[in-house]
Image (cartoon, rainbow, N blue to C red; front, side):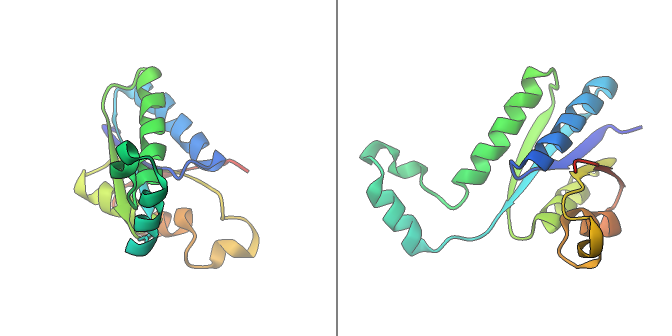
Length: 148
């Protein structure tokens, strides 16, 4: 039924709950998981300044994706430790919802899992809510995890 699952994460508590649900489901049905996180571009000046402050042997690690890469690797490791064998990570520049939707299309996902953060009250009607945008534009089924 669901052979390929895309789950969005930004390291927040809401996202961790969505990742946890993806772990449980993937283990149960033997699905592969595609972890997605988005990042905003960082100016070259800021990166240069941060690199200057880092020890010489660590300067190569300073890049605009370092935080998102760490978030993805933490989630992937959690999944592998829980017994999910097929886990891939995707760090994408730009809007989080677009990143999730793009990976879901590229990987022909059967299911997208996201947390419900930002979907309460009047805010749920505003564009920009990741779960709202994903649910309206997904190329597959969407599971929105109630986290609040």
